[in-house]
Length: 111
Length: 114
Image (cartoon, rainbow over all chains, first blue to last red; front, top):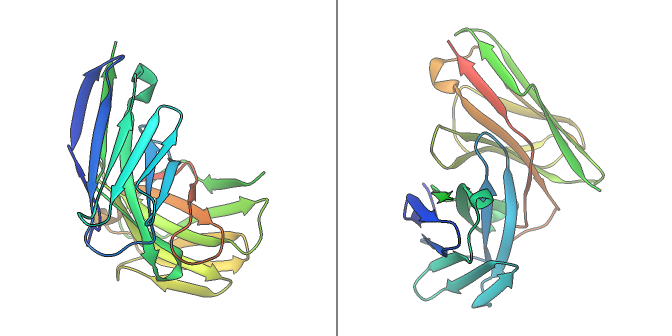
């Protein structure tokens, strides 16, 4: 079964606005990761946050993790048209170094 | 630097035909390897993962099998394709370890079964 569930499923914003995506999961984790997928392409790793961290930044990305609520959020600031893609959260902690991916948020940034 | 290759990029096959998708990784040794399937507009479903040669775990019982004949080669196969096997197949690798390391994905193979 899916560990992560992203919310919203789809998001449409104007260029320059901020985009916030949320992820909820069910079991304990070692880390939570966010990936990006452009249409018809492979996934690209964006950022990893460990279970003992609460917030992490990378460029225009900010990720928060609340292990008590089993949730995470990804904030993209000052969005650009090139940020248009699907974004997935993935949780790590299973045996064999597996990740469990959520269902994704489709972000569209319009000019 | 490490790179991951998948081929073919697209494939159209009739129902009942065999399948072989190949994935190779360069620039690293003893990687963990993964096969995922992604249905249109959906998340990723882990099909198989491997922590070493001939060490393969199946996540979902189905019409597919996987093999790892060499350290950096991972093959996804089927003897007889079903319509439901259509989808986008992604191979990925990660540094060996536990707890869920960052995964690096190949470009994917779009499979259509007619």
